[in-house]
Length: 157
Image (cartoon, rainbow, N blue to C red; front, side, top):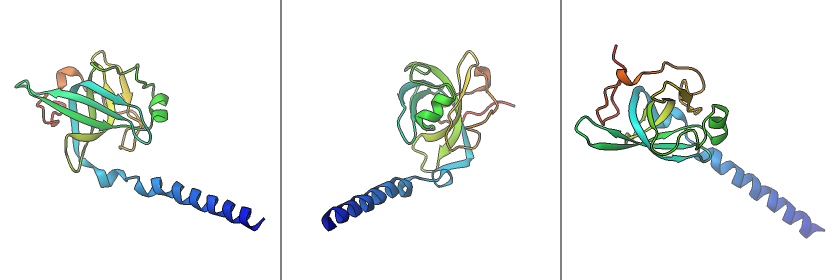
């Protein structure tokens, strides 16, 4: 009886220990991304990873000189994206998008997405931790974007 109780307590203790590791490993938005560095990237999707805890959208931005820059944008969980209407079928590889978000503090051509706009004007939210990723934001048009390959294109005013 005592052995069974000890084993049960050990299992519970290990379960609690394992459950706390992901919480400690999870990053805060402000620690990873910079709201002072918004990015607008006109790109073509190369890979979609709908995985927990954050989805990733990889795309190539073509500069005016033809050079390609591969960007990675963090999004919300698959569940959050599905609530916003985003699935792998919504954004297949080869899809053109305009992505608005915030640059990673480490740069590395990574950022966190706020919204994505299709050439036909459809817009989806990334549903993640970025300010505005869970609510409506301005939608740039293709004509308003000046692609540079550096992710520093901004809507013309």
